[in-house]
Amino acid sequence: MATIKITAAAVGEVMASSKPNRTTFYFDTDLAGFGFYRTTAGTGTFFVEVRPIAGGSKKRIKLGRVGALKANEAREAARRAIAHAGLGRDLANERSVERASITVYTLVNTYVAEFVSVNKKASSAAFYRTILTKHIEPHIGATKAVALTRVDVQRAHAAMSKTARISANRAMKLLAAAYGWGARNGYVPEGLNPASGVDLNKETGRERFLTADEMKRLGEAMIEAETVGLPVNAGESKHAPKGQRTVMHPSVTGAIRLIMLTGSRLREILHVRWSEVDLERGLLFLPDSKTGRKTVVLSAAALAVLREMPRVGVYVVAGESAGAPDEKPRADLKRPWTAITKRAKLDGLRIHDLRHSFASVGAWSGLGLPVIGKLLGHADVTTTQRYAHIADEAARRGADVIANQIADAIGGRNGAAPQIA
Image 1 (cartoon, rainbow, N blue to C red):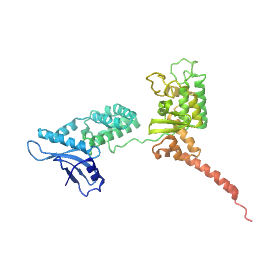
Image 2 (image 1 turned 60 degrees about the vertical axis):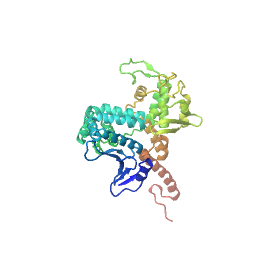
Image 3 (image 1 turned 45 degrees about the vertical axis):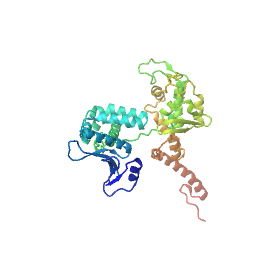
């Protein structure tokens, strides 16, 4: 046991030192009963020891993990616990009762509201709320968080998987994260995480690359769509009269071409503003892509598309509210994309497959994976590895070119042995 003035600096110094051989306790010099301990694993936990007003032995109440809770926050929590004990309240028992009453839905919802919404993108928080509402709540949402077992979670995952195998996996990851956060913040006991170790569904990454012929058909369909128009029944509506045609706005076809020519994600193109386009230097400055701030290098072909795009609002891809004071970006390209791909006889092709195709062309052309990763804006180099097999084919063709030239020079090409004089 040691006595120190518990400050952020003092706690940081202790946590940065080598791991102790046994759990070590540190008590505060100013506030009696307040302290923290560090285990042999290196983790630290703030606590407070109080003696009930009715007498009896001291009770040690865990306040939170070092790191999840700051030293000054822990000190304030300790003061409240000591004050409550002086008033005859059993804070440890009250916390147990609170833990016993919280449901799985409340735990996950609180995690999304207090952590995800603060530390991650708004789109991530919205996605997690959808997973919570559609998958977690119907199966285990009303279950008490402390009563949930791994068997309950595995059964819920199996039920979710009947209709949404991938979303079922995402639900398990969200649940595990919520329990981990809940344990660090006192919502559930430490070490309780029934979603940990659940058997997940196997996920196979889908790779769909357009061939040169398919790209040509897609291009022809877009030209038809923006000039004479596509037949109304070509994906527009199941009940539309035949013989009529719909001409698509050049913003729609322009958006698709930009995705094809830059490898950008759909939302990145739909949300880009004209103020973020530098035509002179050939760059797009995206302030908030999936991986954070991102600069897209524009090819001559992409620049040509941008110069042809009509400027009717603040966004490059004009939406329904283009030019209005409260202009919003276009939400999606679902209907026009369905019509165009149907006309090009590419049913089932996703817009995201255009991004994969951009990368595959780069790999096939002999560009290295680091270059492809930079063009796509990958934050993790392992993400680009999915194109490694295509890059290997390009390397093999390069090796053939080099080796054939050397073989011509030294003789013996195509298996023919050189003549010995």
